[in-house]
Amino acid sequence: MTTQLFVYGTLKNGKSRIAYVHGDLYNVGRFPGVLNAGISQSWVKGEIHEVPKTKLPGLDRYEGVPFLYIRKKIEVYDENKVLLDFKVWIYQFNEPLPETNRCGEEWTRQR
Image (tube, rainbow, N blue to C red; front, side, top):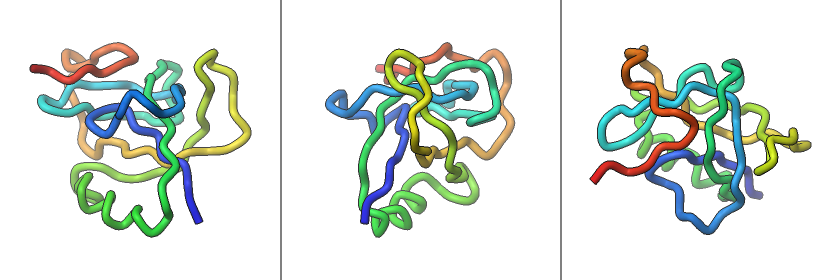
């Protein structure tokens, strides 16, 4: 069995389906964090990855769940910002962040 995962940072590969979710995107340094996932009216651009459900516990460990991130299921929109008929998992940052760290709707790796 597989599930859909929305990725917006270091897990993006540039080859998967482009999508949007509602959330507030922040720069956390070497990686991004989303707050208010599924609640905010702001957009976050990312990709939908199909992953085996058995891989979620390993991804949770990689993302630092439940300390650094939490995983939650939210609505997702296509590249034209039209609501899709399924929900995706997203890793939401689990700490407050300063507004000065907001970075628009798309995060790009800092070099």
